[in-house]
Image 1: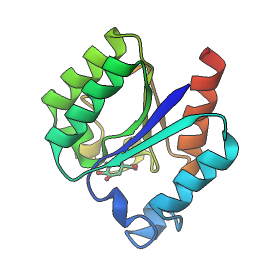
Image 2: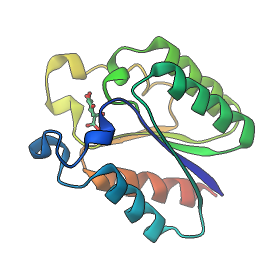
Image 3: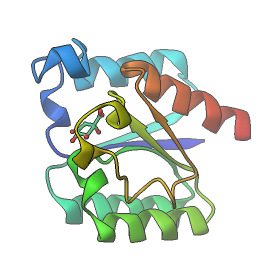
Image 4: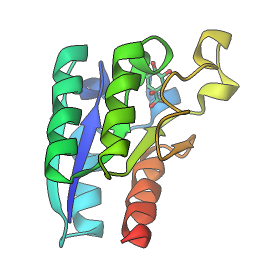
Length: 143
Ligand code: DQA
């Protein structure tokens, strides 16, 4: 089984970026934790500040039957194009689990709307790095 961890803008700064909100773990720490939890998975990882790179990564996941743990970060609240890419990836048969470290529903009102949630396979938010582990768990359970 292949799983892509797809992280949107600013998530390469985890560990030092607002640790009171996003936690002390770096992006690398989260990836290593996932790999330790599921060494049998063929892991892929893409992080980008650019919407188009994230869209292309979703297209590739759709074409290769790769499941996706996706934190769209700030694009969650703004990107119709990413929503469309998630929809076509799910339609192709991949699970796309939207994850957030924080709980956007408990934060500023502009974070309360996710354009992604309605088309993702499901959403897990508010558990820090545990959101990623929970996404791994649901993808594994679905196999
Ligand atoms: C985030 C929540 C978003 O609102 C924010 O823009 C992020 C990170 C999270 O993981 O909690 O960059 O997706």
